[in-house]
Image (cartoon, rainbow, N blue to C red; front, side, top):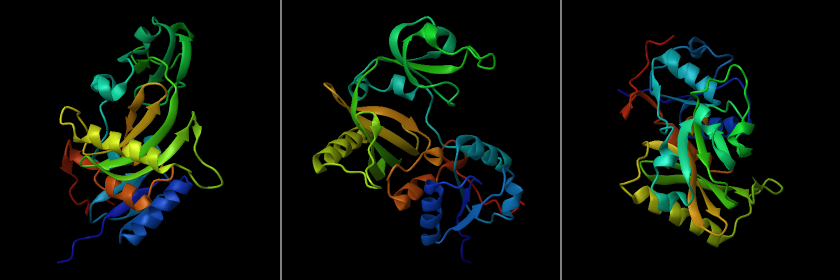
Amino acid sequence: MERPARTLILSPRHSEDSRLMRQAAARAGWRVVRLPGWRVAAAGPLPGPVAIYGEALFVEAIADQLGRALVQPALDWLARLPAPYRRRDVEFTTLAEARTRAGPLFIKPADTKCFAARVYPSGQALPRPAELPEDTPTLVSEPVEWALEFRCFVADRRVRARSIYARDGALAQRGGARPCAPEEERGALAFAEALLADAAVELPTSVVLDVGLIRGRGWAAVELNPAWGSGLYGCDPAGALAVIEDTVTTRAGAPAPDDSHMS
């Protein structure tokens, strides 16, 4: 008996990335469903494995309705990463503790984008909206200057798609192209592969790894992001799809079973 096709669920918000992912999934023989809203019942029966791609809140809502978990990196991953792969000091803390730090410091929320990720003159300059809990997980790091930044879609510690996405802090895009010297791409890939080959580095099975060249220091990890909510930034959609396809699970590391009874 032929196995049911995989289904890619897309959010109602049309974007260039979702269009590219839709095309890649269709070429791979997947069923593609773009929901009209945030209710998975609109997709009808889902007889095979499911992947979800879109903005974080949408993906989390749909996974919750399916009773599934999402593969994503630990919030403190960057702070725990061995120093040779970071090349800068990074601390995982709370928003309350970050407010006590002297600056300048690069401060960002470790999970949702609940405040601006940027260099702050000190922790006292962080925003204070009433709805922002003081125990919000937060990453605090020393400011560095990124000369280059590359995005890598990774599955089972192999880079499946990659592209430059920033140069000197600005998007590396010119007339629809993303110019990159061969030696720059080789440097990024060599660093990413070395990090991925190191058993001391903990990684999810499927993830997006951003790497970059810190001016005056060398190649380093920028951050990890969940593949199901990451922009392509010029990465090959077929390679990205090969990473996203295994990011919906029943529990950590376990592929999701068929959802033939969902309606």
